[in-house]
Image (tube, rainbow, N blue to C red; front, side):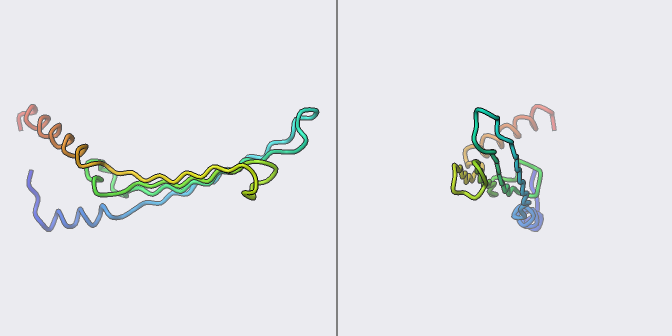
Length: 112
């Protein structure tokens, strides 16, 4: 179905809005006597950003990103073991074309 240029522009602007969620987890674990010589601490911080619009058919131009920083050891200072993950993804042009074909086939099969 066709939409007006004004509606398309409004949807495009709404799709640029991003929702940002932050999550932090800290786990303090006491040492196991006779096996370990110190307490262990695990810390993880994650930030995820994704399009505010929940209609996943409209996110082809939007980017979803996630940053995770995990540390563990005697403390969470970052001097001990650490893993950092930075990821970014979005739908490819090929994925969106396939979705359009599927939507058209559904539209035709429903008799509308």
